Amino acid sequence: MGIDLRGAPLLVVGAGIMGAGIAQVAAQCGHPVRLFDVRDGAAADARRKLAATLDGLVAKGKLAADAAQAALARIEPVASLDAAADAKLVVEAIVEDLEAKRALFRQLEALVAPDAVLATNTSSISVTAIAGGLAHPGRVVGMHFFNPVPLMKLVEVVSGLQTDAAVADAVFKLAKLWGKVPVHATSTPGFIVNRIARPYYAETLALLHERAATPQVLDACLRVAGFRMGPCELMDLIGHDTNFAVTRSVYEANFYDKRYVPSLVQAEMVAGGLLGRKSGRGFYVYPDGAPALPVAAHEAPADLLKDTREVVVHGDGPIADALEAAATKALAAQGWGPARERGSGWIGLAVDGARLMLTDGRTAAEVAAATGIADVALFDRPLVLPAPSGAALAFSVADRASAGWRAQAAAWLAALGFSPLPLADTPGLVVARTVAMLINEAADAVLQGVCTPDGADAAMKLGVNYPAGPFEWLARWDVRGVVALIDALDATYRGERYRVSPWLRRRALA
Ligand code: NAD
Image 1 (cartoon, rainbow, N blue to C red):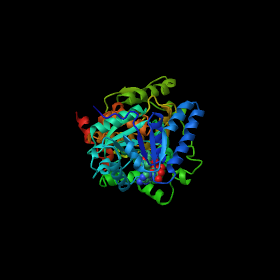
Image 2 (cartoon, rainbow, N blue to C red; image 1 turned 135 degrees about the vertical axis):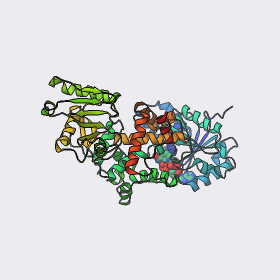
Image 3 (cartoon, helix red, strand yellow; image 1 turned 90 degrees about the vertical axis):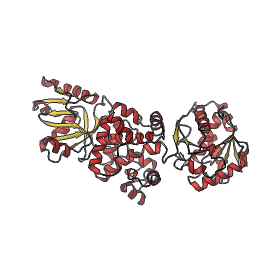
Image 4 (tube, rainbow, N blue to C red; image 1 turned 45 degrees about the horizontal axis):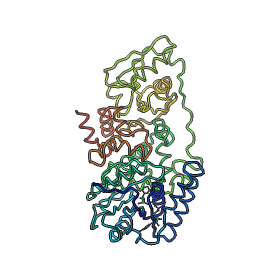
């Protein structure tokens, strides 16, 4: 027999943003909810705000008036922690501070019934540490909701070293009953989402540090890949202080593993109070936000095609196929089409001997040196196929390329239907390196038993709205390509950041 928390009386401790959201969801699902906060009047304030929220839902037709009333009637602000005695589940959502949480759990342990479950909504503190020193650490579990709680589907159910499996299963089932998508995680720095998401910010910050492109260009590239917001606008929204603090905490908790090292670019912004939207300025100036990018050409000049004698599409797979279709269309008016060579080991176009190549993680200069071809241009990985017409696509050109090829490389990308965005000759361009590193981080999380591949996919799609999960991207890419790209980044940067996960390397060799 497992633990059954259906309809169980709940105590929520901490009536801030998260506590209020948790109370609302639980009350709407039929639980009697008591709400406690150390600050006098905070719980009553939260209930008043919840009344307004529920009224709003009724006005929008999203909730029946009697259901709203019943939910509100189930929420009772209380003035003392003694209310814990009646609770079968306590959810803690107080300040993010280990000592404060430990002190609270010690107090709770003395008050609750022997079979009560104690859950913490911490987003970064070890569940093992919170439970440490308690008489019954087995009943402590992480129930990590995302903000805003009523809207965000994901709940990371976090097990510490001593958490009973039955306790984790009970809150997992309960989260499902609340209409959430729970995912099991073990208590490790950043759990699932806050850990796997680090490269989304880190790769863009690294590119900014190298002055590879502007925030607008980087944001445009990642939006086209299906992300709702580019990393720069997203960091501006989250607040650089908060985003930097999470990065630092993951870095420090991993004993200063250079893989997670925070960015000087962001440190400087935080130091100067450029916190993003909330301070009026981050990467962009608010309320205006990101200025529109100058519109890149996405049509080829007519004489480009007329003057071309030969086009060969190289490589296999969906990207090469899409390039062949686009080149065939572009050349149709000239009365001829591209040739195709599948087994050449690279993807892209050979245009009269010049090379327009999908990034494999090397710089254009390295490819030029390795092939002896001076006219090399690289383009980023189109993640969404078929690419929408005029989709932004980053490209770079080798330093020793001719002036003619510099202009032609962009024109060819335009002829293939993209809006080319020039980048400095940095390895792995933008989307390819970001997605490869997200896959790599997810692979390490799975290797270390933090979550399953399905859990990681669900967590990233529901916790941070990614257009696909890291293992879904991996299935559409190919594991050898991902490993080769990260190895190439490592060869350029020679540090700890681009360390291929053994989970990926093993599969690449299989
Ligand atoms: P908040 O500041 O809005 O609310 C915290 C509340 O806890 C305050 O009302 C405060 O008075 C109260 N409090 C502090 N110490 C207390 C104590 N010892 N006993 C009782 N009440 C106490 O914070 P929040 O954003 O709701 O975050 C709460 C927890 O949820 C933190 O652990 C945070 O890391 C986590 N979390 C936050 C988010 C988010 O986006 N805000 C998301 C996921 C998890």
